[in-house]
Image: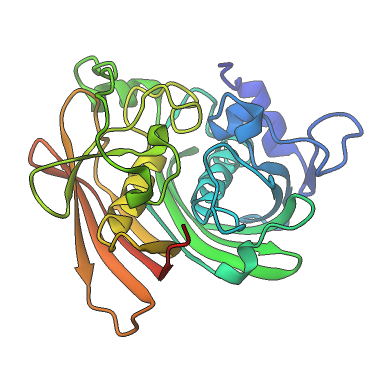
Length: 324
C-alpha cells in the first residue's frame, strides 16, 4: 500500500472544490474509487464511484450496489440492509484519505456506527442501484494539522428518495500509534472449527457466512467467523473487522427468533470500545427488548472478550413468517 506523500497532500489541499475525477476524462459512475481508499482489496467490494466537495465540510458522493452479491444478499429480493453500514464505512474511509488528509497506511478505530433504513427502498430492480450520498463532516477534531478523530452525518438516496440515514465516528491512528495501542504482536486467526449451527437460524443461507458458534447458554454464542471468508476478511485484517461484529449482532438477533420466523433489519446503533482479537473467545450475548408490535422486534447485543466489552449494539427489525 502506497503512503500519500506531503506533495500529494498539498496538491489535494490546493485542489478546488468540485468533482474528484478518478482518471483523465473519466465521468462519475463508470468506475469505482480506488480500492485502497476504502480499505478493500477486491474492486468488486468497492461501492463508491465518485465524490464532489460542495462546501468546506460537505460532500456529495455517488455509489452503486450490484443486483447480486456473494455475501450481502437477501432471500426476499431486496438488497441486504447491512450494505448500508458497509457503504457508510467506505464513505468515512474514502473522505478521510482523499479529502481530509489522512495518509494511506494509517489506521482507523471505529467509535460508533448507526443507521436507520427505509426497507421499501431496498427492492432490487432490473439494473444495479445507483446511490447519491450526502456527507456532512463538520465534526472534525485535529491536533495541529493532523486529523485525529472525525464524525459524519450521512444520508443515502436512491432515485431521489431517502434509503437510509446514519452517523459514523472514527479515531485516526498513525502506524506507530496503532502498534503501540495493539501492544504485543497480534495473534493470527485460528483454524475454524466445524460448525454445528443451522445457517437459516441466523438468517444466512451458507455455513461459511455464519459468524457464530453455539454455547451452553441460551442467547449466548461464541464469535466464530471464517478467517478465509472472501468478503468479511477481504484485506486480511490482524483483528476481527467491525463489519463482522455488525453481522454478529444481526445474526444474534435472528438467533432469538422462533424457527419459523425471519428478521429484516431496519436499524442498528453500535458503539465500539476496543478491537476484537483473534485467538481468544469473544462472546456475543443477545437480550430481547420490549416491543409493542408482534411484527417488529428490538434486541440489545453485547460482545465481550477477556471480561471487557468489545462492542454493544441495539438492533431493530421487522419479523415475518419464514417461507420454506
